[in-house]
Length: 172
Image (cartoon, rainbow, N blue to C red; front, side):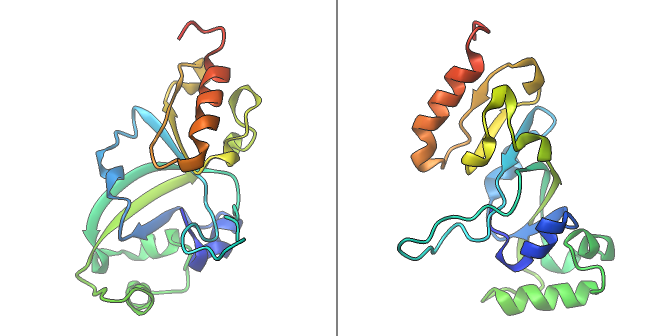
């Protein structure tokens, strides 16, 4: 997940909510049943030839997703977006200025997350930072297995290796 406009907030750990015009598939996930880890990156799309995806920090764990109009942002959410000195109107103006065809009435995906720094070294010694998006069972500490979240691309082979390494000896 790209955080090009809020890299400093992610690095500082002061941002715990993001608003997106996509990622709608998150609305279908029961976050009480799964832990969905996402690697925060500076830029994930539109890379120039030779440019690489640059991770900002350890994975974040998505904990909630909901659909709402951009204008419904509260002061508390502006702070959770990483802009404590801004008003909700300041935030809406910022989003409209940086996203063409966006109005205060545009529906956004409000995504709440927490920092999963524990995932940087991974479970069973496997580094999750090597994966763009990985989803695993909420009972991960009991080694119940891994699930491909899709859109992993070149990591598919690595995902199979991770799954094999993770489930070795568990009979799953």
